[in-house]
Image (cartoon, rainbow over all chains, first blue to last red; front, side, top):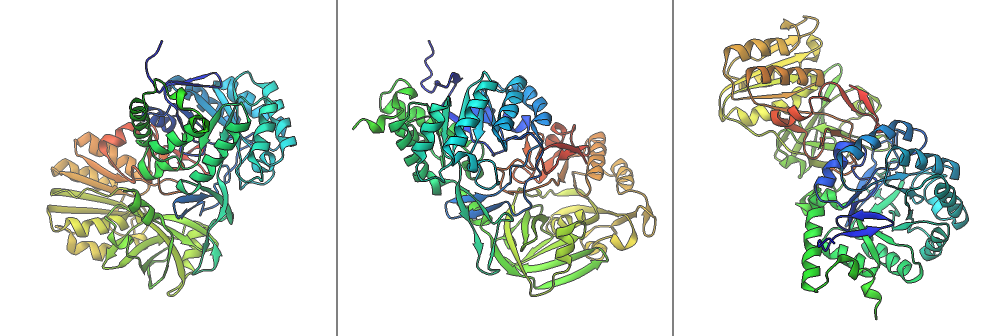
Length: 306
Length: 271
C-alpha cells in the first residue's frame, strides 16, 4: 500500500519513520513538540507528567560528561490536570503519534494520570518507571518486577491506548524486568532510561548537580543501551524502542539490528539541533537501499540471525 | 559545532579576580575564562555558585582572557553571589546562545536596568562602525542607572537617561524618549535588553516606525544548550535559538512577549 521504506508500526501506532523524540527533551509545549515533529520525528514523547505539579530541582540540573550529559531535572511538570489541555491542543496541530510520559508514586496514580492523558488525546502512554533521581517513583518501581507488574496492570485496566514501559538500565538483569513488564501486558518496551551517574568538581571538591546524583545520557551509554535491546529482543516478544545515545543514522540502524522497531533521540538534539531527525532518516533510507531492504521493518533484529 | 558546544558546556572553575560595586544592588564580577573571553555581545554564560545554584548571566565584557558579568541581587542565588569576594571560586559554562548582529549606519540601543550590561559590550563593538550611536538607559532610580560614564565616549551624543522616580535625567520609562527619537531620526537598527515589559514596548514602537529590532530576552533556564525546554518562547528556545531575537521572530511570539513565561513546573505563568 505505501512505498515509503521508513513507514513502521509499533504497538498499533503507525509511524512515518522509526525515530521518536525521547521523553524529557523539549517536551513541555505544543510549539516545541510541533517543531520536533516538523523536523522529522516519527513520534514525540512528552516530558513526564504526574498527578501533582513539581518544580524540579534547583540548578545545576545538567552537567557535561565525556561523551554525554548527566541530568537531574527532578521531573518538573505542571500536573496532568494542567497539562491535559496542552495534550488536546497538541493533538490538533501535530500529525505524528503523541505519546505522553507518565509517572506516579503508586499504581493508582500512574493509572489516573494515564487515563487523563489518553482521554485528553494521547495516542499512547509511556510509563516512566526508570527516572533515576526522584525517590519513590521511577526506577524504584522499575527495579521491582512485582511492583512494576502491579503498575502496568492497573494502567492497562484504566486506558484503551497502547502502554509503553520505559525500562531502567540500573538493574542487575534488565531481561527479567522486561519479561515482567511483558507478562503484565506492556504493548512496547523502551530500553533504556539514563544510567545513574555523578559529577564531582575537583576544585571545589563538591558534587556538581544540586541533587548530587543524576542520569547519564548520550553517546557514552549507547553500547549499554544497545546490549539491553539485544538481550531483551532475544528473550521477550514485546516490541522494543531503542533509546540511549542515538546520534547518527548508524546508531539508529545498529539499534534496529539489535531488535528495536523504533529509536528515540534526545541528547543528540543538543549536539545537532532537531535537524538530527532528518539526518538519521536520510541515512537509514540510504542504508536500506544499499542493502536492498524494502522496509525498515525487515532489519529489526537482523543481528540475531547468526 | 558539536565539539565546540561540548567544550563550551564543560564546567570549569575560575577565581573571582575583582568585584566592582556599581550601585547598592548591582556588582560586576571579573574572572579569567578562555572560552567565554571569545564570546560575542549578546551571548550568555551559566555561572555556578557552588552548593547554591547555577544562573544564566549576560556577558558584560570580554577582553583578552577576562570576562565580566554584572549582577543585580534579586534572589537567593544572586544575593549569595553578592556575598562572594575576590579569590572565591565560581563555576562557568558557556558561552551559549546567539549574539547581536552588528549594524552600521544609525543605531539606537535601549537598556533597562542590568539589561544595559550586554549593550555596553555591544556598543564597544558598534562604536567603530556606526555613523550614529544613540543610547537610552533606563532605571527605577538614579543610583540604579548603569554605565553612563562608560557609554558616554562610545555614543555620538550624550546617552539619554531616564528614571521612574525622576531622581536623574527624564522622569519616565526608557520607551518615552525612544518614541521621540524614532519620530525624528531614521535608525537602521534598534537593539534592546531589559525587563520584558520594556522590550515588548520597544518592539511595538519599532514596529510602528518600521525600524528593525534585535532584542535580548530572558527566561527561566536550566540546561543552557537547547534540550530541556525550560526557556521556550513560542517555538524558540531562548538559550539556543536566542537570547537575541529579530523583529521577524518577535512577531511570531507576540502572544507571549511581555505577557507570560514558563514557570519551574513548566506551567505558563504571567510575567
